[in-house]
Amino acid sequence: MNQTPYAYSRNPAGSMAASKTLTAVFMRGVYQWMCLGLLATAGMTWFTLSSDAMLSLLVTPQGGLSMLYWGAVIAEVALVLVLSVRIGKLSAFSASAMFLAYSLLNGITLSLLVAMYTQASVMRTFLVCAGMFGAMSVYGMVTKRDLTGMGNFLIMGLIGILLASVVNIFLVSTTMHYIISYLGVLIFTGLTAYDTQKLKEMGATMPLDDATAVRRGTILGALTLYLDFINLFIMLLRVMGDRR
View 1: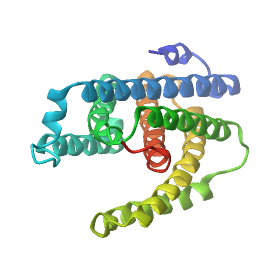
View 2 (view 1 turned 60 degrees about the vertical axis):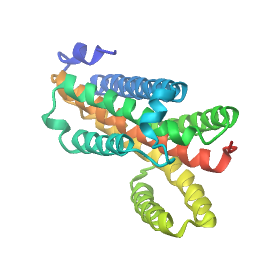
View 3 (view 1 turned 180 degrees about the vertical axis):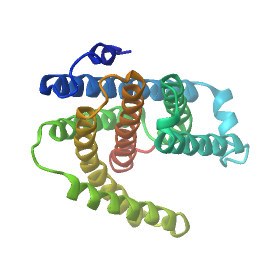
View 4 (view 1 turned 30 degrees about the vertical axis):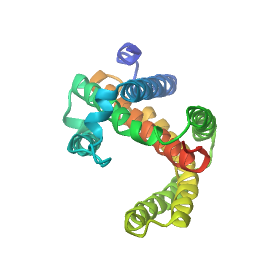
């Protein structure tokens, strides 16, 4: 994995060239770790779907979700919370390992959703998601417009669709399901640009002489964009996917 941040610890902190170089290195590290996380998730999803033994551990004989599945979901939430809240206390190794562990667990839990759709529609949705994510991330990197206002609005919208999703567990409304999915596509598309811009700004202020802090920031940034990508993929799959 990219170790270049170490090379810039000797540059003057006030150097504009050093700041731009560090930003580029930081963002490259973010994308590398995000892609590694996505590969881990995809690999674990494929492995789970290919293994009857794994699937039997996730689903009860009656067709419900097993305790192991819910344990994986709880572990995912715990890992995200620790990485988000305690990142400043973690070593570079611990932060990296926890991110990869989260990616693998997400591959396990995501497999049951993917199994509901045809392989062709999953691949088609992934390609569309990658294109949308890439375009909006590039926009977030190059735009001169401050996206803070849009980001705050999108975060409020995200809270709204989370609450609506909980309500729809009890209502089981197909109409609300599609409304949430379409809104989710818009929200996570916008959040991709917003989060990329914020990470670009973070990269410009990274401490040049602290490789551990740079790695922590890289992992946190990778987790942020990873979550944007995965959630955008899920929302698109609900809209575009062909059920088996």
